[in-house]
View 1 (cartoon, one colour):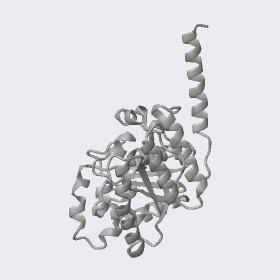
View 2 (view 1 turned 30 degrees about the vertical axis):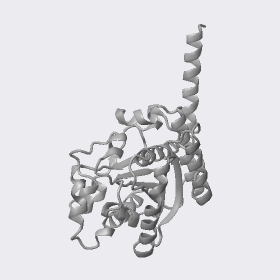
View 3 (view 1 turned 180 degrees about the vertical axis):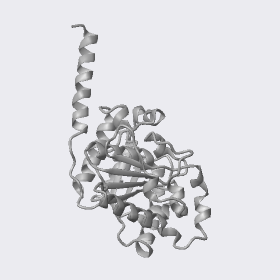
View 4 (view 1 turned 90 degrees about the horizontal axis):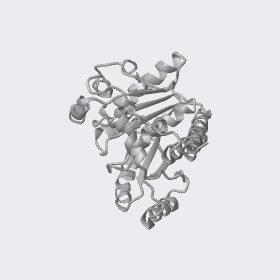
Length: 290
């Protein structure tokens, strides 16, 4: 066997082993865990983390829903879900559609679904202003969906709400609807600066709107172990949030960035890459943490 053939055989073998590990079952929670994934600073890996953790949990045999609350619709794109013209979360917030009617299956996953964003969502911040109980509209819809799915015998284990990079009414709706807050923090200096404002919003929502919301999970993204700054940021977060931090940093890799351009998560685009392995480990920690 030539050296090229040997390397190809080894690559295929690692791929097969990697896929088997990705599909190992994860423990299901007793009740639906609803996460809001938020950070008002853009470019920190918020959407990337949302879709990849959701995909990893689904690969672990759990029933997962992603709600794309970002007008940019990047989570919908990464999951390969039609969203430009399809009804989605905007119609839910406006009360013009039933939430169970806008849920779409994600191709390639037996247990992963998505409520997409669409172009109308960009107007939602303005349209919500005069509405009664405007901060609670997503919460009410999610509760209706959980009840509907449970009665149908297909209840969700996890729901992830991907927020826009701002602290407006859309994000407040997500905070009010969720039970747990997941914050992705980019391993760079400026990422820490916005964390204080986010935590202030979290405290205010917890006090005024949703006393059941808990900051349960922090993950480190775009980590480059070769730089002192990345390690300093990781140490700082670890010091201040020892219980919330999942100490498995997501590496900065080209493959993670490439995956959405193929309408995929890294979990299917390159399941044995360092990024996929890290997200799978993070998902398993979340599942086992309960």
